[in-house]
Amino acid sequence: MSHAGHHKKLILVIGATGAQGIAVIDKLLAPSEDGSPSPYAVRALTRDPDNPRARELAAKGVECVKGSFDDFASVATALRGVYGAWVNTDGFTVCEMTEIWCGLRIFELAQQAGLRHYVYSALDYLGKWDPKYRCQHSDGKGYVADWMKSQPSVAGDTGMTWSIVHTTPYMDMLHEHMFGPVKRREDGTVVFASPIGHGHIPMIALADVGFFARYTFDNRAALSGAELKVASDWVSWDYLVETFTKVTGQKAEYVPITLDQWFDRFTFADMPLTREQSIGDELWTFRKNFSAWWTMWHDDLVKRDFEWIRKVNPNVYTLEKWMREKNYGDEEVLWRWQKTLARGSILKGVADRQGLGFNFDAIAQL
Image 1 (cartoon, rainbow, N blue to C red):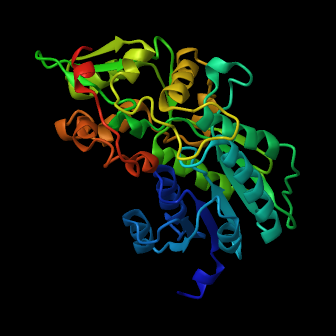
Image 2: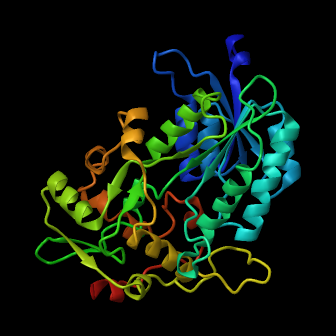
């Protein structure tokens, strides 16, 4: 390593091998806007340093250390000597109760390790006490963010600054079973079916998550104690279909469906959401969690200030720009999710799980 390399600010990324972590790391390592080398080096916490994703990170110069976010001894070791941390815990690996406790404990360990900048990757927690919006994988992060706001954030030279970045569903999930098209009719029409009604999802391109992560670390003092609510574009399914046709020239149709029709497409709808279950809570299934999630979008609960977003990131992705860049109308790209089932998912929690499949009879009826 060159002498200059020793002066790089070391950032620990928790959730490093997930879709978000990889995007964040790529941006942290990228040259600065003026073309100078990145001021950051990255350490990744990973359960399995031999995992293909971890090996890809190591090939980019990332230091991979073994551990997991719910093993606090390994987290404490990984935090040693780091300038900052990007913390994205996986709400599909652990239950909500564990995720909340990990969020608090990792923050405390970061304080003890003398971090300068702690950045928590949160999700919107809007249902509050309305059970129809109770979405475990969002709410756990929402509780942690609320707790963090009661902690001091120090912008000066001594003490720890915290910032919270609220992300949204990834635009890249248009490659996945969540948002991707369900079938092509005999006349060539591509069918997108969703229970969102006339609601919207403020989708974010993974590259834009990376942008906002880097922006947050680059502006530590200004963003001390700040919550950044980020996204790329405001997507309804009518807009999705209209943009798809504009970009690809292919006919497309949006078929509004019920929640039950959406869940009927999956063989795993009634499987447990996570590998462990919160004590004292009823069984939390994929259906239960994502019913609340879709209801949140259907009812337009999650808002974003796109004027502010475009001011901070003038090159933020629109849906059209993203589709063009990804060759989204291409057959291989469009139907990849059906061919790979869970195994090729960008979402690591999905890719790691067995027994996920699709009910093609239900899809045929749409």
